[in-house]
Length: 321
Image (cartoon, rainbow, N blue to C red; front, side, top):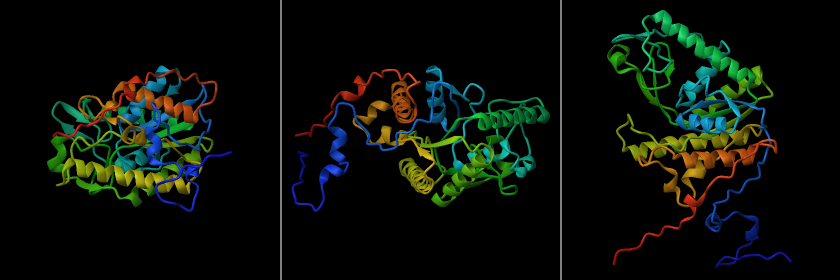
């Protein structure tokens, strides 16, 4: 006979049919309730990743397991949905405004506005050639990928007031005065629109590809608003998470990976972090990847046993007398 738990007060429903908050602390290893087990990855799958630094960490961990990702070919970081959408548009010749952006002259040479700012090229032509190579690499990755993983990190963006192009990062400090870029923050509606446009590009060019969306748990290092960075960070993550929730709810074929919740809503969550309390410790990344593979891989993928003893110790805060 099925046993029913009851709360302190009578309720008109059967509590066992619901996932309760205290359930997540019942086990030594926190368990996520999931009804979305879906085998979209096998040992021969090709995976393209794009997004924030957390996306790269996940790609590196999967590479170590022998699952082919795009990381070794492309490791350019994109922190916001607008920049990610532009990269998809560029890969499939849907971003004509890209060619209206000037290559920046800086001390020692040139940098491309849509590449990293640490690589300085001797000429504008060299910078453009490097950018074209990256665009082609993305196109190859997106066209051949069995799975595309997008990790959204923040909502704070900078764009060119004339072209409307959104930069993947704050523009190079040497061009800020002449460029006078506009700072803005993405709304939930804008993020949802970006995701829809990305999804349509994928469907039009590689309809068999599975799309997985994640939210990066890595917080802002700084904010360009007048807010406390903790407030700005929570607003950023809240908008992203809300937009992703609505988008995936309206597009059932799109997959959501709960990497954000694994880190932020879990027992002893502080143990996931490096000492800077911003970046995820390697054992935390390995745990997230193992949970992702359990959720989305088939039996051909040999998921390694992850040491989770670091999660198990109970920490209680004692009140001072």
